[in-house]
Image 1 (cartoon, helix red, strand yellow):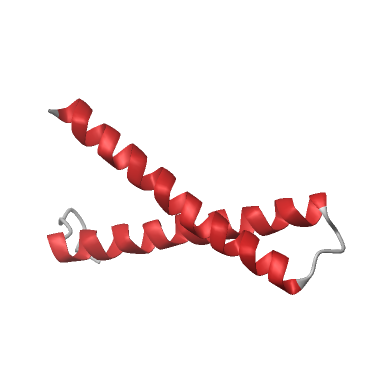
Image 2 (cartoon, rainbow, N blue to C red):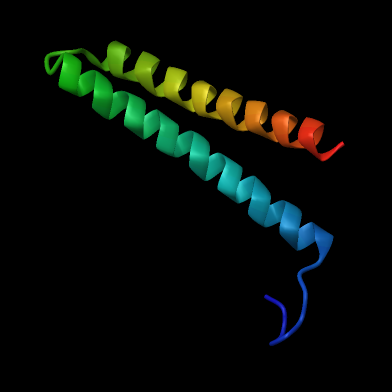
Length: 75
């Protein structure tokens, strides 16, 4: 952490951004599993695993889409 009034280095910013991106993907996986449980409370472990993978990858794809959109708008 920087001292009071200091700035983060680019390495620290990348580290924090990488952590936040992973947190978004994990949240997507959790949301997908919870949603799947609401639809089918008797689903098996493989169904839950498929929902988690889909949610994780889907959240990553959504984040990537918005990053590209911001880059295009910034040009």
